[in-house]
Length: 176
Picture 1 (tube, rainbow, N blue to C red):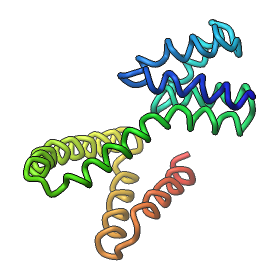
Picture 2 (spheres, helix red, strand yellow; picture 1 turned 60 degrees about the horizontal axis):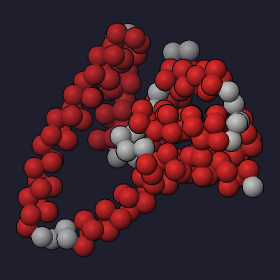
Picture 3 (cartoon, rainbow, N blue to C red; picture 1 turned 90 degrees about the vertical axis):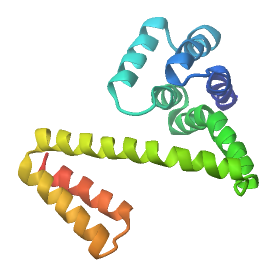
């Protein structure tokens, strides 16, 4: 029964918490603190602070931590699934609609308008990562990582996931 309670406690905020993590935090607090009593307000505040300190979506991190505290690894998995399930269902539904109308001229026009801003945003993000790496890791490590990655991706056609994993290993071994 605890898994069902975990699912409900995180699924409801995922559905009605329009606006992402910040909008759903009070709803999660109501479920976790007031409805089920899994933790007090002080402890919830500490979990919230920890979630804010780590990268990534805050609601998902909080769901994983609270689910683990309540019911171990299975509880964490249930809580995380319940948090992402509403967004996942909406994306699948919208993808089905997009695939149904993908050949419609207005949909094609809309997607062509979206390509340029996405390319610019990804370019800005790449430059931010590059300069952040330049500042944090130094010139030599940045040049090694960028050069090796570019060579592996473009010349040897290595899958990007393998290049990313290799960069993570390089960072863990050399930069730690």
